[in-house]
Amino acid sequence: MKKFILLSTMLLVFSAIAFCNTKATNDEMNRETKIQVAILLDTSSSMDGLIDQAKSRLWNIVNTLTTLKYNGKSPKIEIALYEYGNDNLRRSDGYIRQVTPLTTNLDLISEKLFALTTYGGDEYCGTVISKAVEMLSWGSNSSDMKLIYIAGNEPFTQGNVSYRTAIDRALAKGIYVNTIHCGSANEGIEGKWRDGAERGKGKFFNINHNAKIRYYDTPYDDRISACNDRLNRTYISYGAGGYAHAQNQRVQDTNAMAMSKSNFAERAVSKSKQVYNNSSWDLVDKVKENKDALNEIKQSELPQELQNKSKAEVQKLIAEKEAERTSIQKEIAELAKKRQEYIDDQAKKDNNSTSDDLGKAINESIIAFANIKGYTISK
Image (cartoon, rainbow, N blue to C red; front, top):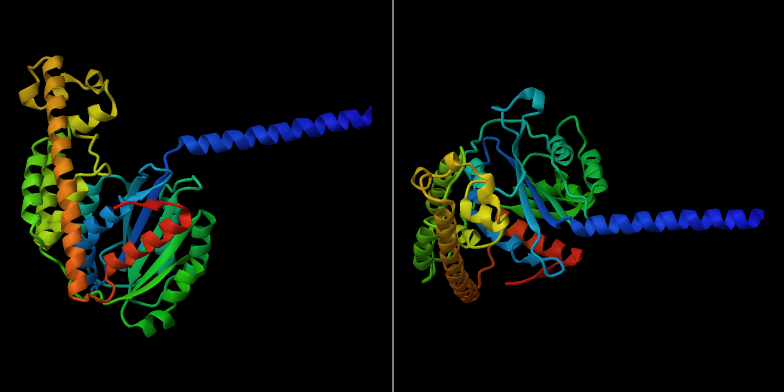
């Protein structure tokens, strides 16, 4: 009898464990896979070149991320920005600031990146890594790819928080830490930047942060630019902040063009992809995401020119704009493919073996981690 009771108890325990494991697996499958990238930039007085590289490479990095798929699906892409080492920041915060949380709002990332200035300072790598690990909302799926990139030039050992402790906290959450040292290779090694990457199971890079980014102008850039102008006209802003967001979209176009024609083309390519979603302020994206959205949006939240139209008329306009946008996005995608083929051919002819820059370092390691995590790469 005792044996029977013991056996029954064990069966119940094993059944409960199996049920919990199945539920956990199902919960994970129901959650969207994420690629989360936190970029920690040294904004001390010697880092103007690094910030320029970040501005020049943002959309190229985004486009690399959009080539990744997991089980045939495009993951949700979130990017966060931190700055550190700037004496204009509060001493009590360790001269560190969260510029943006992990967000899908790419125009916000661009806006905040272009607003960064350099000054100072004391650069506490361990502290900024620790803050990024603890403050950001990191995913919990085993399929999530969670990456920190920290770029700077002073020794990695500065500050009250040991980089070893900070990296251990990152690894406990499945976050890989990559280091990008701005300066000579020997200084990077002696300053423990390489050790930081090795401990963080990440990649160590050494870059000339003052080097100008090499661009290739292509025969397709102007056509992509024209497509972008048409694309912007398919957006219909709504809500209290809708108009401001629409204006910011155009401001970030201008910022991208200020860096180079090539950078502007990269941004337009990003805007043609699923990752560039503006459902928080654009009616087309909102209705595409939620077919009943118009029933939830007040008439007063619509643009003034639509407030006197019937719901059917607004719905018809949205459908027309969505069809137009889809057509333009397809055109950009076709031009982008030809553009990239042209750039690849030119790079081969030039035997382009330029040293790493911020964007090249991030892109190369993203692809390497994607292969390890079982992601597929599509062009």
